[in-house]
Length: 270
Image 1 (cartoon, rainbow, N blue to C red):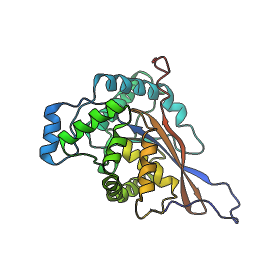
Image 2 (tube, rainbow, N blue to C red):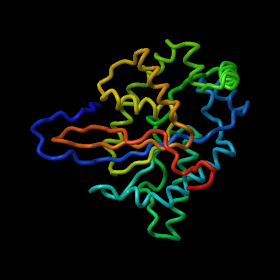
Image 3 (cartoon, rainbow, N blue to C red):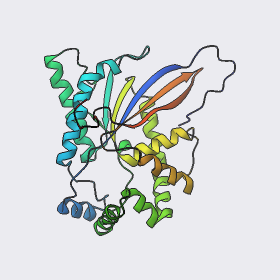
């Protein structure tokens, strides 16, 4: 996919808004031993099957309430059609969040018809919004988590420091998928889209837009930048993208990164 910057001196009109995308990170999870074992046996990322924990469910309810109260006004932007779709990673922690938000909007609509409902009855599941696999060995994952907690730094930073070349390679392997994810959103039948995904995938999307989309490989500096962006994306946070068109060309712009409008400092629902 080509994501171009606007540098057309002959353009006589302002670029037009064509898409709005909200990228939502999944909630926190429970690292259940049996599920870590299952993922390892299947050769999957160790977090593949782990469920959302109690704190994660509480944050998801707040996010759901925020959308119920505010999505109607969010959809009123420019000349876009006020219809939206929900997409989700197939991985449990993201899909759980998508299902809760989607169901709550539909149920709330039965009591208040002004509350918008998604164009798709169920969230659209797509591997394009899955996570960058980081560790498939349970013992290694537990060791990284222990180091992260003892040093007080993000787990992904520990992962990078242990093997920078492996991390860069992993991002390079996922680059084409991330490009396809942006293309899918660009071609979506609805102008607004809510995507439930994961920290590293969201970070790669934002990094790709920063780079202008013309990227064929991930360098060591790129890998570090992706991780820096990832640190700014807390659980259940919202990152907003907008796509503009100008003379047949398209450009994605980053509007916000890792915002949590559904949570006030004192922990109450906003």
